[in-house]
Image (cartoon, rainbow, N blue to C red):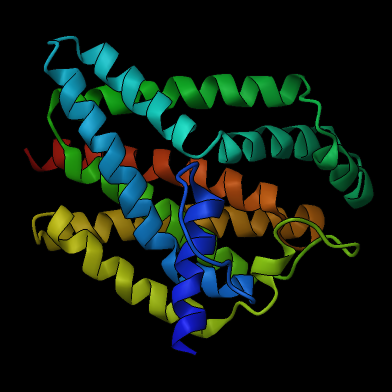
Length: 254
């Protein structure tokens, strides 16, 4: 059991990042879900370092750009691709079958391009603001919670494709225990990042939960469950929602 759980680290890192990681993948991929928040923390740490180095140039816009780009590179653009596919399918499909067919198409349509453009523009604007106020904690919290949201959706919702797909191995076997464990770990991880500020923690968690709930409702109505694209898109959107919520909360408390 312990060996299987630890092997989930390998699968989690290999799935969510470009980082090479020695070892054997978990036999049950749902085991990797326990480690998603920790991988989010790892990705966030890399992006925070890039933000800090970028700020040494005195060019805050460049620091924001480099930080966002680092996130895309570290994830192989996996979640951004999911957002593009979801936008094409949800806006272009007439029914459940056509939505799923469009989402599976490797080509990116106009809806996908527009969604990516506006999301990346928004991320750059928000991250630039975080860099300007040197709020590295909120940056990492957003990235960490984005991976937590993936676990919640995978645990709560059925897999939408009857024929199976790349994310099915993660969704099948996921359940309430994954939700509870990752939630406890996530809360423990974000407290020091929020400088033990209960308000900051509450704002981050509530905004992430709201993003997850919205994604769940829309995905269930459109396709009756989740796919890898839904999980990836939810991750991208959650980052932006949490960053915005943290910035607005800080502005209101000043």
